Amino acid sequence: PYPVYSRLREEDAVHQVRFPDGQSGWLVTRYADAEAVLKDPRFIKDFSKLFGGSMDQMSVFTQNMLFSDPPDHKRLRALAQQAFTPKMIEGMRPRIQQITDKLLGEMDGKPAANLIDEFAFPLPIIVICEILGVPSEDRDKFRMWSNSLIEGTSGEAGVSVYEHMNEFIRYLGEWFAKVRQSPGDDLISRLIRAEESGDRMTEKELYGLVSLLIIAGHETTVNLIGNTVLALLEHPEHQQLLCESPDLIPQAIEESLRFNGPVEFSTSRWAAEDLEFSKKTIQKDDLVVVALNAANHDPEQFDNPELFDIHREKSPHLAFGKGIHFCLGAPLARLEAQIAIDGLFKRFPSISLAVDDSELEWRPGMIVRGVREIPVNLVE
Ligand code: HEM
Image (cartoon, rainbow, N blue to C red; front, side, top):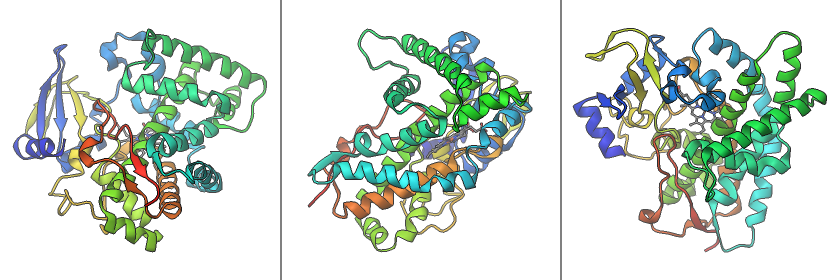
């Protein structure tokens, strides 16, 4: 998409889009405009407008902080925040390392692997399921439901997304009922216990939180790990450098977030009033979307933006968003990616891409940026 973004940034940085249902919208591509939109309270979320306000069933998945405005946003975010403080995340380091070592150990001795399926996918889903308290035998179901929600297809012949969503909702209802009877120490148990003390989320809001964390907690991190591995395999000089100086890994992750951010576009925002923005007249209720990866390649902000350069010292990229909706899981995503990249290149120092660059299949859709598979040779 980068040549298109580059043309848009130069020719029509805040670009008007007309959707088939008549909804008027704007795509924001320059860094300064992107940052301004994300921080401006005149651009609101209002989840009732999502899906044209018509998909009642989907509202179960959108009553969460990502689609809320203050004051609800503050309450919902504060309740979930307890599981994502820097201290809580740092405390997970040994467990993330253990899961990483186990997954890498399973690839040991093999000549080749698909890094998405065997490594980048399982790691974040196991971690987020443990945070939430999802029983380990049900993780594959969560992975399937999450794929359905993000790709809009069930992936199973004769089964619709709605059937999957109904199964998911039924599962959540039964799971919450069990937790109410015997709570543990996970996030959902703590939120359910807090219900009784008045500091509460409604049942629908709990559904919304679980869906958000499952999707946000693994769909994105899979692609952060995948895109970073890919960029490093395509730049062997950087790969070599990281093996010699692993302290550069956090910087390499930041550059990967800027260079090929896992989230292509911000979620939708609506103009709360008629307003002038970047020389455009935006009407009340117009949809505004930020092209995060276009902003992260803006030459006004980043020198030589098309270059993948792990030596960039300060990279104020927008891959995790900005403002009140700044990614709650950023510290977790960064930690998982650091441990994963460090472990992978240490264990398989001569790893290489097994296909030509042009054979990689990028996932469809506007939400995530990542490839379906990364076939690699693990040994020379
Ligand atoms: C919000 C990106 C990983 C949980 C966001 C937003 C972005 C983002 C761009 C803001 C969306 C907007 O303003 O429209 C990413 C990326 C990730 C990642 C690139 C990985 C590389 C995670 C993880 C979790 C998580 C691991 C949780 C376990 C959330 C939540 C929000 C959010 C809860 C909503 C925050 C709010 O509305 O206040 N993320 N995310 N994310 N992310 Fe992430």
